[in-house]
Image (tube, rainbow over all chains, first blue to last red; front, side, top):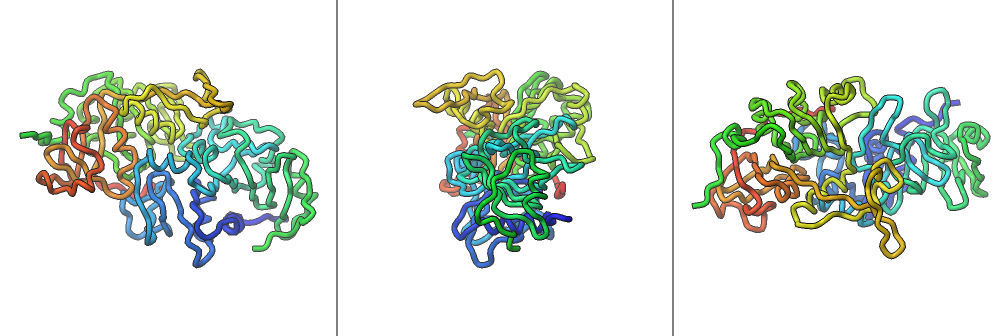
Length: 218
Length: 230
C-alpha cells in the first residue's frame, strides 16, 4: 500500500491556500507547493531573503540577486517587492505571514516541531525555521508519515531537538491529513487506498477520528 | 572633498588584523561581497570570527577554510542535515577545528540591528523551549516569556551593494539587499564592494538603501561569476 508522492503531498498542501494569502514555503518538499497553487488566485509567496511576490522557479536565466530562500532562481510576479532581512523577519515574527509550510522530521501530539537537527548525522541548521514556526499565523507541516523502517514521525514527544514548541496547526503527509487540536490529534483525511487503522499503526500517539473523516480529494 | 573610494579590495582591507571579528553580508548567492572575501583569503588573516547568514552554501566564504583562517563562525545556516557533498567548513566543524554558533535568522539580523541602533538587546519568543535558549536570560513581560538576545557587532563589515558614490551612499539590487543594510550599521569599519561608482547625486536620494554615514570604504569590482549551487 503506497502513499502519496511528494508532488501529491504538495498538491494537497496547496489546497489549503486561498486568494490574498501571504505564504512562506520552506526548503525541500514545501518548495514544490509553488507548482500547484490554485490557478488565477493571487497568492503572495514570501522569501526570507527579502522578496514578497515571487513566482515560478526559473532555471534558464540565473540572476544571483534573484533567488528564493533555498537559493533557487525565481521569477517575479507583478506587484512584487524587495526588502531587507530585518523587514523580512519583522513580517514573519510580527504575524504578517498567513501560512508557513515547513518540512518536518518529527511532530509531537501537542504540535511541537523538530525539523532542523539530525543527531545521528551530527548536523543541521536553523535558517528561518524557528522564526517561521513561532511567527506565522498558521503552520502546516508537509512530510512523509514515517522515516526509515516505518518509524513514526508523529510522536508522543519529539526525540529530536525542537524548532519550536506547540506551533503546528496541520500535518499533511503521504498517508493523512491531521489537525493539531488542544484535545489532541484529529485525523480528518486519509490518502486513497489507506484506512484509519493503517495510519494509526504508523503514528505513535492515539488519533481521534473526525466524524467527517474522508479520503483526500486530489 | 569626501572620498571613500579605494583602488582595490586588497587596499580596502589594509588594516584587517589577525583575530578580527568580521561580518559578511549576503544570502547564498545574493548580495555577497565575493571580491572582498577573495581579498581576505589572499591576505591570509587568521583567527577570524566570521558572522554571516550562511557559509559553504553558494557563497565564497568556504574559501576561508582552505588555509584554516576561521576560528569561529556565527551563522544561521552552516551545516546541512543531509547531502553527500560536504563543505570545507562542515568538515572542519565535524573535526572540531572551528567553532560554530547557530542563531535563528530573524534573531541574527535583529541582534545586528540592535548593535547598530544603540539598543541593549532584543526580546523575542523565537528559541524558547529549544536548544537556542541555553545559557540565556528569560524575561517575563505582562505574563509572556521572552528570550533576551544580546547585540552583535564586529570590527569590520564586508558588504555588497550594486551602486555607490564617493560619499559612501549605497543602492542595492533586488534580493541582494538582505543583511547588508543592518551590517553596515554594526561594525567599526564598513567596507562596501559595489559594481558601479557614480558621482554624488547619481543615486536618487529616494533610492539610497544605506546612507553614506555608515560606510567607511567603497571599492568597485566586477562581480565574481557564481552559479546556481543547486
